[in-house]
Image 1 (cartoon, one colour):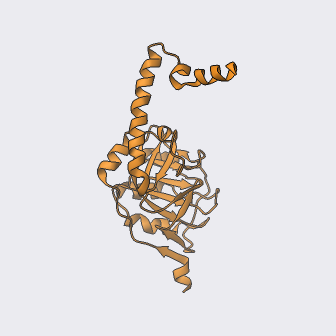
Image 2 (cartoon, one colour):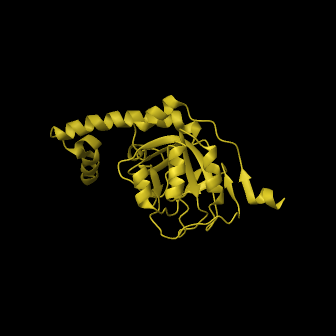
Image 3 (cartoon, rainbow, N blue to C red):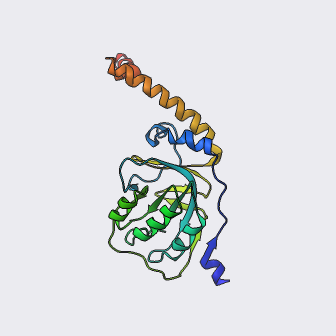
Amino acid sequence: MMTQLTYKINPMPEPIAADKLERLAKLETATLGHFYHFGFASPAISPVLPSKTVVGTVCTLAIPGLDSTLLHHCLAQMGPGYFLAVDRLGDRKYACWGGGVTRMAASMQIAGGCVDGPHTDTAEIREQDFPMWSRGASPVTTRLYNTGGGFNIPVAIGGAAVLPGYAVLADECGVLFIAPEDLDAVLDAGETKTATGLKNEARVSAGERLGDLSGASRMIEEKLAT
């Protein structure tokens, strides 16, 4: 019974449809942040490498402070199109993700990874050109203590509740996890918002005032007139 409580390992989630991920990859987290209010990880979780945009189907992992045994094991269960989100259960000191994990993740063609905690071996992550998000670098690493953890269970990543099978969009501005039941609506609204933004950018470049386009100037003028 104790073994079952120590490790909770669930099957891989169904992948998000490729056409939906292709649409998601054309959007920006900052665009979706104008209207969507769920699933955004804390801004403290930032890209290790610049200029990376990744989409994928989320696998989740929860591992305790000094132990990365389950991380080493579960990487072999993953493959192309999956993104690993690691809940460190509150630890902010010990880096579970470093050069060896990066090399294994890259060999499995995993889309990317996110750790709610530190990473290490920045140079090796850069060498592998692997898309990775974390709370920063730490020289103190985890060990193989075999104390337990959970794979594809509910987790919290930077304050966002995340389930296996969610879609993810990660870019220079942050990491967004999207529930499958929200994805179609988010894609439609995001594409509309992007198109509107491009038109407004062109109008501002042509000399129009942002306050007029957004309605901010009208709001202020009406307030001052009362």
